[in-house]
Structure formats: C-alpha cells, structure tokens
Image (cartoon, rainbow, N blue to C red; front, side, top):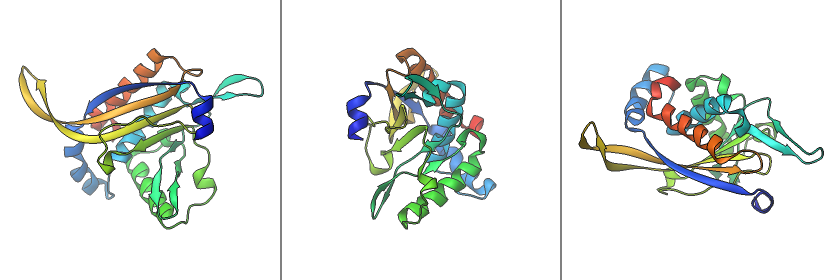
Length: 209
C-alpha cells in the first residue's frame, strides 16, 4: 500500500446513493434466492457491471513498455478483517455472475478468510477494489488502490437523512461512496460517469438482480 500511495497520483471523488429501496429489497430477495444478499453483494455486482461499461477503470500501467492495458477480466477484491489480519479475497469475472452467485462467493470467501483457509489463487488477480467501512460505523473515507489496480470504491455507513423528494421532505437511507483513481489511467470526467452509473444501479436495485 505504501508503494501504491507513493507511485499513484490519485484523485478522489465522492457522492451519495439513496439505498432506501435496496435495503428494503434485501430481506425478501434473500428468501426468494435462497441465499443471504448483503449490501456488499449489491456493491460488488454494481461495481463490476459499471466497469464493464467503463473498462478503463480496470486498466493498469505496464511499466516495462510503458503502456496502459485494460484487464481481460473484471475481478473485484474486497478486504476481510480476519484474526490473522486484513486479507483480500477476489471474486473473479464478477460481471458475469448473478447477484446470487456473487453473494454465495462473498460468503464463502469471507468464511475462508476468517478461518485462514484462503488459497493463494483466491487472493490473486484483482483488477478493481471495494472497501466497505460502513459496517464499522464509518461515515466516509478515502481508500488506497492496490498496487496492481488503479481504482477502488470506498463505502461508508448508511445514514438516515432528510432529503427533498417529490416536492416534500422525506427520510431516506443514504450511503456515502468515494472513488480513488490513478490519474495516469483515467481522467476525472470518465471516473465521474463511472461512479454515477454505480449510483444509478444502487438506486434501482432491480437492475442488479
């Protein structure tokens, strides 16, 4: 992480997503799909599908040439706090998996991480990252992309917020999202479009099912 911080000139953008419908959908969806659907499962799928439309977000710099190379696959890494420390499993080809498949893999990899049973292959191949500190009560933060990637999405807590909606005030569940991106790989406008697509999907969670 230190080398990434020293060598990647990152910029950061932040926005909020209204996840009221998403949070309401989860319990019934978990029952109908036969597997627990976490917020992380929605986030991983939204991140992967957005990266499919904006492939530069999974590009990286090849220093030997040098050139910018877009990854062949969208592999989402997510850190897990385990007794042995922070470990980072990877869901490969996340854009090709259904929400239920993502949820099942997230659960399996999380359990293996916490019991120190992850294989080397299950921690390799990251092309984009997700870090969710909202589960620890953190409102927002700026994450650091892994050395092998150029983009990471930081996720904060879901906070009940009074917002204007349909000409009146309404209490909605708002999630803080921050994107850290290597400026050598992507510009700010492209990254903003990418983040806006993630938000659009989270605010219309049926698109992710």
